[in-house]
Length: 578
Image (cartoon, rainbow, N blue to C red):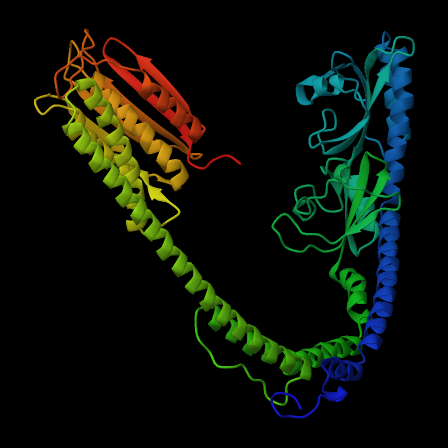
């Protein structure tokens, strides 16, 4: 029997068995296979449709490509002849004129000298090419290019200019460039007649529109595409893009096919009918049946997991959260409809909570007992130290020798410093940390009453930042401070310009570094202001103790002595380095 009295666990109650039974009904494997096969067929259909669009785009621009290649070839041939006839301008111009007359598709031909002056041309006129074109840029990078001139220098109409550099065969010097112009009207007529279902545009490698099947003033449909062939990996057969336009909307399919590799490309924007022809293949290729099977599988799996696992685990999770928040709760129970594995988990959880609660109570009792014992130890140590201090006081009252009395007073101050630490530990809220700035303030106040005579006009100032230290580090710090303040009271004096004062500061910097500074003014004769008015006679013990305590802290002590003041600075880390 199980703890809830339902009966022995049967294999039909197993979570694995129930999940397998529900997921088998969903026919998920068949749905996955159907989707994969359909996706493969769809990709192949889309690929074939794209190749068809690219091929039709290439055919639509075939005449333009042939015309451009003829222009480039003619420019090469004419340029060589013009370079050889550079001194015979009339003959050169007749050759250019004859070429234009015999080739109706070309409207102008001319040779541009290296200085940008075009004297040899079919129009038989002198044209300064550098006035209206970027001739300096061409000279700096003399490479074949095709430009658009909306107002031809000779024809006055929009032309397509093929510009080829001509070099000296022996020296490689740039002799000039051969220009051949084709009217835009001819290109537009060829593009319009090519295919009425596509709008064509010729662009250079940087995406600049050179010619379109529409007017040059209406090229926004191509410019907003943002197609820059030089930034694309375009294969020889071209590429079909269906990307975003510059305004962020999805554009119609655009076929990009190279006419002259790395120089001139044709972009074809197909009409809505062709766009539907290409894209609808994907929509028709995905049957609804595999998707419905997939959705049914997800629905069945969700219902199964939620019914058998999630709702029970949610209850168990909520119970754990309540217990974590400190609540005392009864045993967690699951109904007979829950899987046997989860009911066993609930029983294990109940046992765990019982053991943890019992162990936690025992641990809290032990900690509370240890704290009481430790506070009692600190209390007794404090009482013993105060007893020793009282004995020292009695001894001081019975001693006549001033030097001995001062020595006993120093020992008394050190004992009281230790006593204050133990008093702070057993009266404070924490046993592992001590608020040393409070203790330091008490020590300074006590030493002020003991070490300075009542008639001494010495101002004692403190600037103590909050600082917590463990007892092992607080003891040497406070003993160091006791010695430093005692020495300051011993040697304090009135400077030439000012009043006598003692300043004690405590700072904790970023990174855990603690700085204790004790400063006292001195008079030029370095006379000490002691209770008995005698001159200070130092034995050097205080300085040795200061260095010893600083060594225990793992810190450094620096002393600066001037005619006006003594300055002692101790630096150490709040937490000891491991």
